[in-house]
Length: 339
Ligand SMILES: C[S@@+](CC[C@H](N)C(=O)[O-])C[C@H]1O[C@@H](n2cnc3c(N)ncnc32)[C@H](O)[C@@H]1O
Ligand code: SF4
Image 1 (cartoon, rainbow, N blue to C red):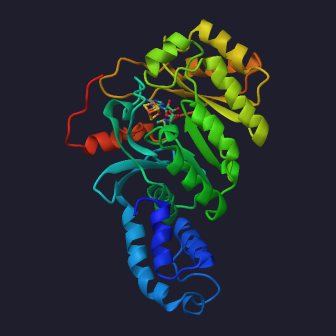
Image 2: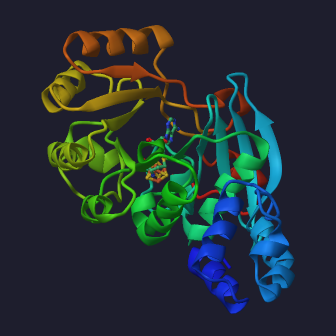
Image 3: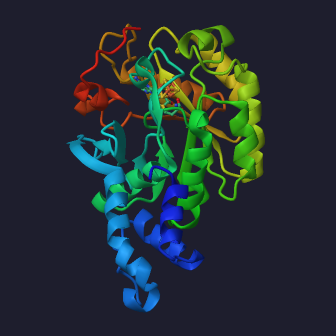
């Protein structure tokens, strides 16, 4: 029962009509007990559904189980999550009510600075498994924002991610811009996002303005020129009205050069965009370095002065050795393929 369509089929087989289905999904995705609400459950549900619901609930609870919790000093908390088939993924409870969820086990893009990318793609995470990560987070803390910045590339699991987004944005008590789709950029994303009933905010993982360097850093990302990616993102932003977040993992002497800063100004000045600079979070055995906080802050200030709204951010839970995919890698028995 990894997909929301499986959950809906199960409920329909138990006699649930559309309103019962909506109610069950709403209560589950908000981590509320199925017998909560103003009316007693006996008044509301058909007998077959009432009797079958505990088994469905048990299956829903088994979609994403808490394996371990890793609190960070910054108020974030990394969760290692066990899925029904024994696979694990990571979710992160962020300070101020956000949760970062995973969309794939592993990732085929293979970014050279990312732990998840080293594993290749293991499997897609189902739409129900994505919502289950949010429900699990909500059983631990209130959640007001969901970002798809955990393991995996949402563009490579587009149908499942959009099904989950549609549910969370309708039944899950989340505004559209509180759902953040983070991607390396893909034509399918720019076609699909504007067509959905729920239009999430867009985070574009750009990392460089140089096409040649992008091919090196993101070896299996679609070959779309950085300028064209920004234009495509900007068209979506004009349709939604909320800003594009441009993600920039800051790698010392790689993408923090004067040439890159000029490129950023050329591409982003005047755009409805926020540049999120996130100093590289160290991954074992990789050659990259994180610039000092002072250097990163100076870069952010310079960009700001040159007309690019720039935010310098910590990646959540750095102190728990929890860069994306590292908790899973720690618990894995198979060796990590060396880059
Ligand atoms: C893990 S990815 C998942 C979403 C999507 N695949 C993407 O790349 O946008 C989310 C963000 O984490 C960043 N990231 C990956 N490895 C990192 C590292 N070692 N240090 C800091 N940020 C990292 C990526 O650059 C990306 O912006
Ligand atoms: S940064 Fe995103 S796209 Fe790149 S390997 Fe990691 S998860 Fe995949």
